[in-house]
Amino acid sequence: MYEVISGLRPYHNISHNENLAIRICQGLRPRFNIKVPQLIVQLIKGCLDSDPLKRPKAKEIEDILYNWYRGNGLLQTQIKEADNINNNSPNITIPSTSLGLLTYESRLLDFNNLPEPKNSDDYYEQNDNIISKEFLESLEYCRIDIP
Image (cartoon, rainbow, N blue to C red):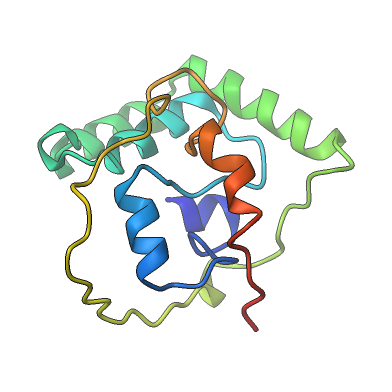
């Protein structure tokens, strides 16, 4: 969902190494580069919960998406608000990536002794994003350019 909405791979600007794996276990989640409706953010947060038992089952996700498709007025309102913000903000760049061009080659990252996965302390707060506020500044220190 993150990649489809943002047009970017999660952690696209961070080296995919053991440090990133540790940070994810400590609660790091990808950050949206655009305004996203809160209902969608909540669904993504649920899917990224560190506790697999708290993640929604495929049937639950199907039901949520079906209800949205059938006309959830709140979601439609949130989409309009997000579009308004995204279209009128000079600081927001919406990628022109089409879904057909989104590709990523996965690879096994086999690290030993990773910490027990957890969500960040502020993960469940009502925020416009899925990343913890505590990681925003620290991300600046681990950014790299990936060609």
